[in-house]
Each structure stands twice: as structure tokens, then as C-alpha cells.
Image 1 (cartoon, rainbow, N blue to C red):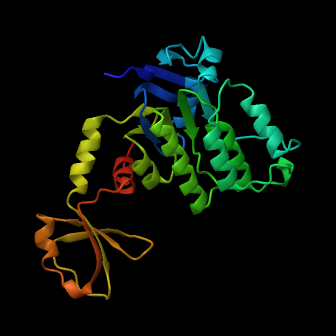
Image 2: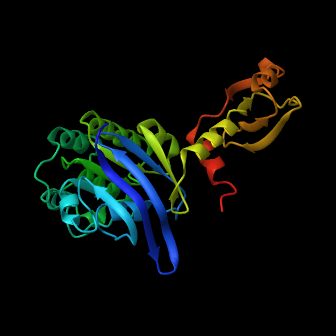
Image 3: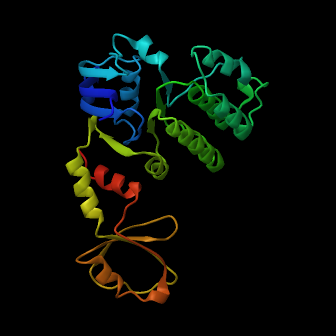
Length: 293
């Protein structure tokens, strides 16, 4: 069994009377990529800040890269790169000066990845950061976070403000780090991309990690769901309840009984696309969050 890069047990955190983390249990095995999923306010950012010693837990235990981040935060940060969800940069510095400042805190960096991101992101590094757009600032922050050669990367919404081509470039960069057996914890609201990138997913709701049994129950519920996009409006066979309509016009349906038997009653000529037994992370996320306390 690979060693744990991160091990949280019974971790709690309050801000005043509000409980933000309520007994979080989380294990990250070294060399794996874990998607950290949950609605705004679930506690994901607080969890990450605790891991690098920028916030302090009220209870429970935490070990990150062999250290207690509450006591040895500097030792953790020397081997960890953290990208905050709300990242502030010095507007008066140029992009090049920003990178030089950020990377000087680390002994090593990924030189080949640096060459690739400089070419892919094509930032005007001689310009002042104040002249950058929000997307350009995010790319610069990503370079500062991904280029250090460290053991653990904690990335809080790294694809914030990125356009689709830039998100693909980010995914390629993370695949590079995966190939080097680095440990990555990534939070994002682009659920499909997190699902495609991660070895496993951790759902955080109301300051607690959702247990595997609840996730399996949600998957079982989704096994009877159908997503169908029709070429023309046609009457649907009985035995299906409409759950919603996707932006592309696809219908989400919950079928009573065997889904394939219901599909067989549809006119094949009317079907543009069909998905039986929903497997999308968005669907799982929807089921886990609906009617949650």
C-alpha cells in the first residue's frame, strides 16, 4: 500500500459559531490525483488551507507529507505547491518578475513544463500584471503553481477564468505531473474535466466527506436514468418521468422498470442521441446535493 501524502482524521473547524468542517476523513495516496468536489461553502477551500498551514483546525489530526501542518507549516510548504481559489498577484510586477519571485522559494522546477507553458499560454511576460485580463492572471498563477518540482499540488479551481483551449492546456500539464508520480488534489466546478483527470473523487457536503455507501446508492439510482435527444417531438412511451431538460435539448428521464425495454418502445428514427444509465459526474453531483440538509 503506497504511503499517504495527506491523512486527515476527524478534522473540525469553526469560524465563530459556524461549523465549516465537521469530522473530515480524507486520505490521499502518494502519486494519485484526487478530485475534490462539492458546492460552494462545503469546506473545500478551508480543507486545503489547513493542509498547508494557512488555517488551523480545531480538532482531529492531520499529516501532510509526514508533517503536522498546524505545527510544521513551513516544512509542508517546502514540498507542496498551493494555488488558492482567489489568487492575488502584485500588479506592479511584470509577469516575468512574478514568476521569478514565486519560484525562488523552491529548489527545483520543471524546466520542460515551463518551456511548454510559456509557449502554450503565450503571456506577455514583460508587461505589468495590472495590464493582464483575468484569464491571463490565472495562467500566470498556474505557471507559478505548476512549475515548482514538489511532491504535492493543491489546486483550488485552477480552471477559473480559463477559456476551453486553455483548460485543455492545463489538463495536459496536469497529465505531465501525473506521469511523474506527483500527488494532486484538484477542486473544480467543471465536473466532467475533474472526473476525466482524477483517479478517484471525494465529495464534500456540509463539511463532511460523503461516505462510499451513499455514493453507491446514488449510482444505483442513476442506473435507471435515460438521457435522450430527439430529432422531432414525439409522444414518449408510458413509464418514464421527466427530470429536466439539458441546454442542448436532451431530456433527462427516470424510467420505471428495465430502461432498455422502455427504449425499445421509442421510434428509432426520432432519436438523435441516447444515453442509458447516467454515468456523468454532473448527474451524480445533482443526486448527492438535492434534498441535502
